[in-house]
Amino acid sequence: MPDALVNETPLLVPPTLGDQTFRQLSGLLISGQIAPGERLSIREIAEAFGVSMTPVREAVSRLAATGALEVSRNRAATVPVMNVQKFRDITRVRIEIEGFAAALAAENRTAEDLKAIEAAERAFRDLSSDRPQDVSNAVQRNQQLHFEIYAAAHSPTLLEIVQALWLRVGPVLNLDLRENPDRLESGIATICHAEALDAIRNRDPDAARAAIARDIDAAARFIERQNKLPS
Amino acid sequence: MPDALVNETPLLVPPTLGDQTFRQLSGLLISGQIAPGERLSIREIAEAFGVSMTPVREAVSRLAATGALEVSRNRAATVPVMNVQKFRDITRVRIEIEGFAAALAAENRTAEDLKAIEAAERAFRDLSSDRPQDVSNAVQRNQQLHFEIYAAAHSPTLLEIVQALWLRVGPVLNLDLRENPDRLESGIATICHAEALDAIRNRDPDAARAAIARDIDAAARFIERQNKLPS
DNA sequence: CAAGATAAACTGTGATCACAGATTACAGAT
DNA sequence: ATCTGTAATCTGTGATCACAGTTTATCTTG
Image (cartoon, rainbow over all chains, first blue to last red):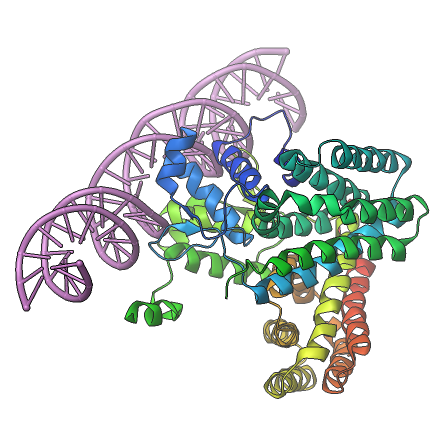
């Protein structure tokens, strides 16, 4: 599931335990299965994953480096709790950067990119109408669609930045989604996705940027409206 | 609870050896004192810094997570070598993101921010005219000015992203600068800095974005013109 | 019953070791 | 002199231990 978020390593060499731990933790974080404020003990994770402390330490270090985890001295790592101020800050940055990625995708997408995006859009729309309460799959397919678009921008640098941003907002966005599945039923996401797809198909960068910006903004407004964000 | 007051001041707790190692390596990378392609052995660094392998491993993991270092399985970490394609990609992203940060700075800067930016601009300009061959200080003061501007945007998320970008381009930009000090004499940087300062002073986001974009683009064109980038 | 002192358990940090894969150096053969 | 196979060296990876600071539980005390 977290494959879209993690860079593929050559299959010639087997990934290290540190890599595997990083991927597993990333998947749990981005899909909202670890709540903000939750404590992550290195020893507990090591025991749960059947490895020693060393690979977990490396994974936690990497996650902390990208802001996905917070570590204090001699204290357990925690998923950052996001207050309203931080949430607005990261939302503003996401709108700019992911909007830019969508604009680049509209310019640089190939025919294969378009086909992949169309398939991902259809998959999300079908699930949204057929099984709107299937939150786990919705989270996964929404992520799949977004990153098909961002991959079509053909900018490795931008892709890594967006991945790091999603690792930060994942716990907030998707944990909320799991608690309020009706957010999907509003259909705002489906509309924005369709607009983004059209813009990318027509190679319209400004429209693509606007569509992604609206998608992000709508979700953010929904989160803020529930007032679950602390302080 | 007195604990709350103590915990609010994180500078009282001494940084870990891993943090210090990370900072030292970051400084060496961002200032171009470690060349692209150079190998960084954990044991060598540990011996040079007088620590064990453990803190160095953590620092290297964090740097690799942000793309500042590349690690292959069972091989020494290396400073990523940037070909023309990668360099253009990251330059394009820098123009968008750092331009956005400059625009935010023009909107959100306080009077104190402006004073700090003005001082940094003056420091760079003075050095540029008085001792144009003092590359080490020029690199440092250029960085100082840029990050005074980016800090004035008051967006922690954006600031971390820009820092990660500088860790990647530092080796290329500043190593080149050390080998070709005459780039400073062109005065393009000084002109762009002055434009950016004016725009931020006048709270003109578009002009601030354009000035920073021109500064980044000019330096990038200078690098590409020398054709030192491989492949 | 509530509040505070104290001990037990838990935490990350750092160092050290064993190990297997990768690199390098060196030898011999052609 | 050049190629080649092999041994020595170097590499990150992972596990384990000791240690000090933090957190939590327990017991005492008012």
